[in-house]
Length: 134
Image (cartoon, rainbow, N blue to C red; front, side, top):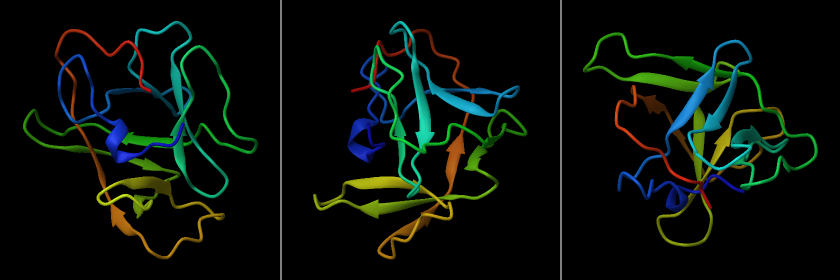
């Protein structure tokens, strides 16, 4: 599934954010969901960031699940960051007004109509999680 900006609403909390869990031991990133098997985040060879559909581990051939780099908040009211292979991300328009596909800066990334973005992170302390992301 492509990681499109309009897919990021967490229905349980009502926030316009995706909640993810980072694994320091493997450098992978998974959506924080209840669905059996979870939903893993990946980067396609052209840089598109996506996540596996619920109930399956399918991802396009050549996709990478590592190395995501997570830097936590330094203090409670600050912002941490997320990168892929030490680099920031890009938001590229996909045709619909105000809808953007998120891309990682990998060797196969060739799009030119994008803007650079930094992905901020914060500790999630609320109860509950989404069942799945569609």
